[in-house]
Amino acid sequence: MTKRSHKALIIGAGIAGPVTAILLKRAGFETAIYEAFPYSNGIGGGLQIAPNGMRVLAEIGLADDIKRGGSICESIDFHSQSGTALGSVNRDMERRFGQPSVSMRRAMLNEAIVDKAWSSCVEVHFEKRLARIEDRPDQPIVAHFTDGTSAEGDFLIGADGLHSVVRRHVLPDGPTPCDTGLLGFGGFVPRSLLEAAGAGPSLSMTFGQTGFFGYGFCGPDANNGAMCWSTQPAHGIDAAAFRAMDQAALRQHLKRFHTGWHDPIPQLIDALDEIIVTATLDVATLPTWSRGRTLLIGDAAHATSPHAGQGASIALEDAYRLVRALEDEVEVGTAFQNFERERRPRAERLVALARRNGNQKREFSRTGAWIRDHMIKLMLPLNPRGQDWIYGYDVRDVSARPQTSVRRDRLAA
Image 1: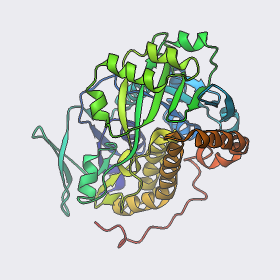
Image 2: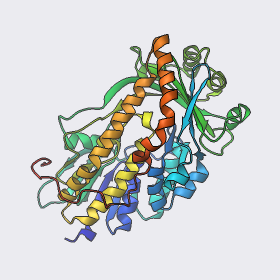
Image 3: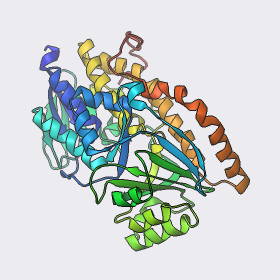
Image 4: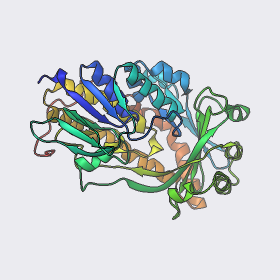
């Protein structure tokens, strides 16, 4: 069997899965995506794709569409709870890195990526929840679904997110996602609220004595073209308990928590139509990302909390680099090992960075908050070049990447 005749089964139609399928299809592989949930174009909150992720979207011809559907972010501006400016980062991103950072609704991004997969003649199947994987020597790999159907292929990619079912196949007794002890509350508001407040094309981020609040534009739509979110210590109440509350109770909670915070934070909370509540989880490290002909990518392999703004971007990087690894190596298991060897250090470094950034959003004493704010003010001017390793990463440049395989005994099935 030649490499070109290989068929990939991809579990998950979020971000990494469809982009991997598009790139595999272009490389001559057959591809099929299986998603557990029904098709929907209205799910999720807001996110940002940084220049490193935008390069991958440019490779599949989606960068311009995403820029039009989202909002280019020209800086991230930090403030104290009272509104005192602490400084800015991430200026001139397009000039420095060739692509801008773009804020958007996750639903817009998912819809654009899935539409691109369809137009690329990728099979996409919804309401196909994975039950188990069968991987026998000299036989096709088989994905069995809870509806009694199955699919056969030559290898399987687990791009099924934080709560990955594929991860349980690769690591039956492996680590589960870690709760970082922070909760996220977020939603969308009319653009006019930020326009009236004089907001520019940036993300505004405010550190409180306890917790954090962020807001910014995320698209051209007048009704939901701005996003805002609150990060808070859980204090013994989990996300499920908050999700059981009605919207009025959630809004009252946010208003109490952010009492006295600077404008327009109170006005944004009042304007939230639907408040989404999420636990803040991550997957810092796994013993291996593959088993036999099955590989984990994106959040399934290295879920990061949102505090570095890199979750979607490194998933996009994974998609591109995996396809290059499969093109460079005929034997699938070796390609998977080479991919992990290359990607693991960067992914784990970003997960750790996000965890450290989240620690700045916990509970501080009055003095501790004052010290933190002044440290932020002192350190931000030193930031620009210190972030080049994140945003300057170019998936197309392989000159500095390792080319030899990892030892088989380390990642054996």
